[in-house]
Amino acid sequence: MSGAPGETLAASWAVYGAPLAALAPVPAEAIQVSPLTPGATPMEALGEASLDRVTVQAPAGALERAYVLAQALRVLKPGGVLTALAPKTLGGSRLRGELEALGCPVAETARRHHRICVARAPGAADAIAEAIVAGGPRALSPGGLWTWPGVFSWDRLDPGTALLIEKLPALAGRGADFGCGLGLLARAVLAHEAVTALDLIDLDARAVAMSRRNVADPRARIVQADLRDPDAAPGGLDFVVMNPPFHLAGHEDRGLGEAFIAAAARALRPGGLCLLVANLTLPYERALEPAFRRWRTLARRDGFKVLEAVK
Image 1 (cartoon, helix red, strand yellow):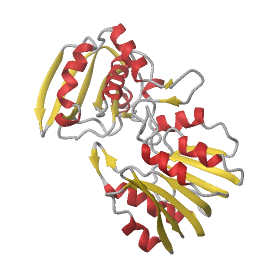
Image 2 (cartoon, helix red, strand yellow; image 1 turned 60 degrees about the vertical axis):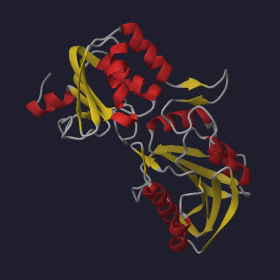
Image 3 (cartoon, rainbow, N blue to C red; image 1 turned 180 degrees about the vertical axis):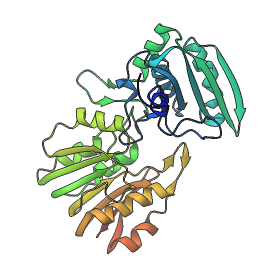
């Protein structure tokens, strides 16, 4: 391997997510492999036994976490070091057992309410392969929708999205689905023949990949982007639909939904329509009030509400 020392180090080290530097420092040039980072290198694209170190901020979901740990072991060279950490209430208390189930001896420490586990490759090849299959993309049924553990509501149609689909008015023109997930809401939108174009936008590269399988419509453009970025969405839209997230790193963050509402206000033309669904407890009306000319509640059911706002 050639290049400057920093380049050599970065090329041999991957990081998944954003672990606290005080708990698991990584070089700034390490290869980012998280699907929640636009522009990251997918870990699935890395060759087997190609890296010396991988540091993982382990996700909270059990299938997703086992998949990420297994992929990390797959890409490590024999003797390569995997450092995995998570808050103990968000999967950290299970990390050691999960790594041992993948065939690795583990050294564990605890700091700042996190569990930090260090293991060495290679692990057990059969167990690693099984975890990758179990946590990877799959069709829900023969010929059915494609999904991937870790994507929002990956194994069911969540009731909020179902309510929004039920209450969709007649839609026309150019629109966007903010936080498109698997593409279920987008499919309902594209059933409206007067819709001429629809941008599906999601931060999660896995959601983008599954939407590309699930939404086979020439009017759809599917992109990975962070809607907190002012340039993430096109302008002059006739409508925006969304079921905005309100969790970040396992914790409630109402600012995400507020950022989606601000993005919709920027993207819509005057008179454009924003349709969103949210938990009844989330006070998104306060964010709609200054950004839109008027708004109203279209429906309330099963702990959810559908809000309609006009730019």
